[in-house]
Length: 78
Image 1: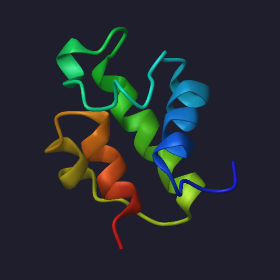
Image 2: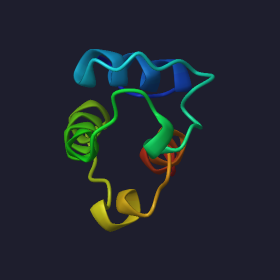
Image 3: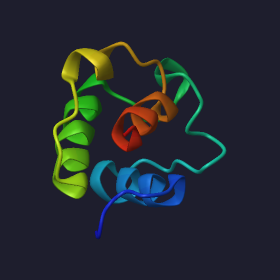
Image 4: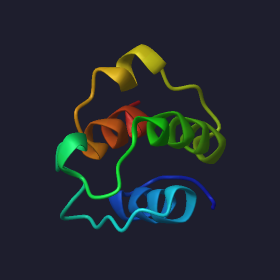
């Protein structure tokens, strides 16, 4: 993947890396209501995002998020 520049890129990364059937409409759903979500997914997603974006993302900040939308915001924040 050439990076994560849009929400569509992010959704594609989540689908490819985690095998979760998320859409742009479901990224805002709380983790505990997301079908198939497991806390281990968060670490795998963080690793995949760092690889895709080429930059470090704060684990403590990620742990404070409640949805994939929050993780996306951290990943694309300037």
